[in-house]
Image (cartoon, rainbow, N blue to C red):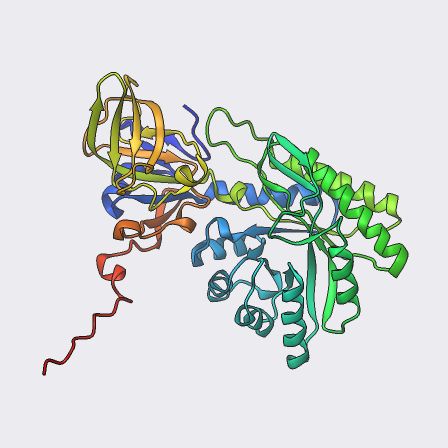
Length: 439
C-alpha cells in the first residue's frame, strides 16, 4: 500500500492525513469529503521553485487553478510565492476575491469573453495568453478604449503532443487551442500584435499534454518554439522576455504510474531553454511553467461512506458509496484509475475483490473496478487517493446531489475551506411555475 505525503496509519488502525484522523473528519464533516494535505502542496510548490533557484534563472511557477480553485487554495498558492493561471471569469473573480496579486495572474482560455477580458484589464493582471485572432481583436478594442497596453503571450501549437510515457510529433492543426507554428497562423498573429500599440508581446506559450512522465516532449517543444523565435528575431528583431512551456507533469495514481521528481522536469526545461537561446543568439528569457495536477493531485483524498452491496455470482461484487460521478467524473469521462483503502480498518486483511459503484443513476457511474479490500460493511469509510485535481473542480449536481465539503489538514489541525452544499442550496436559483389566473 502506497501512502502519499503525510498520510500514515495511526494506532487505531485508521488512516491519518496531516496529523488528523480521517475517521474523525468523516464524522465531523460528513461524506463524501475532500481532504487536502497542505504540507504536501507546500512541499511540491517549494520543490519547483527551489529547482529554478538552483539554476539561477528568472522564472515563474504558476499554479494552474483549473485543477482546484477556491479562495483558500488561491491564498495557499500566494503564501508559497506562486503565480496563478486562470481560465475563466469565475477563476479570475475567485483569485481577486482571495486577494491574489493581480500582476502574478495569467489568463488562459480559447474563448475569453468581452466581459472576462474587461475584468482582466480593469484589475491589471500580469498577462493574457492570447489564443486566437478573435481574441486579439477583443483585446485590441478594449485596450484602445481604455488607453492601456496589454501584456500578452501568444499561445502556439508546436506539433508535439505528450501523454504519460509517450510523445507524438504531429502537425497539430486539429486543436481548439492556439496559433499553429506550421501553417502560418503564428506568423500572422505575430505580425498583427507587433503592428498594434495595444499589445506588449512578452513571448510565447505552449502546452503539450497532461500526466507526462518523461522530458523528451518538453525538449522537442522548446526546440520548435525557439526555431520560430529565431525567425522572428532575424526578420523583426524581436527578443522574447518570456517562454512558457506549460505544465502536464505527471503524478502517481496507481502502482502502474512511475512519475519522475519535479526537479527532473525543471532541470531538463532550463537546460534546453539555455541551449536553444544560446544557439539562436538570444538572451535567456524568463521561464514560466504551469503545474496544476502535480501540485494538488496526490495531496487530495476523497472519503466516502459505504452503503449497499450487490453480488453477481461468478461475475463480481459491487460495493456502493455515497458519492460517485457527481464528485469524481474522471473515471466515467476518461477511464481514470485510482487506489483506495478502508480508512477505518487499515490493518484489515484484503480478503475480497470488489468494484466500487457510485450512487448516481447511471450504469457508468463506477469509481474503481476490481480492487482488493477487507470485507466492506455498511458504514465503513472508503478513502480514494489522488483526487485533489479535477475532483471538486468538475463536481456537479447530477441527480441533485449536493457537492461535498473540502477540508485542509496540516500539523494536526483541520480547517473547513469549502462548505458542503445543502438541499436548500440546490434550489436557490429555481423559480416556480407561474400560476395561470383562472377565469
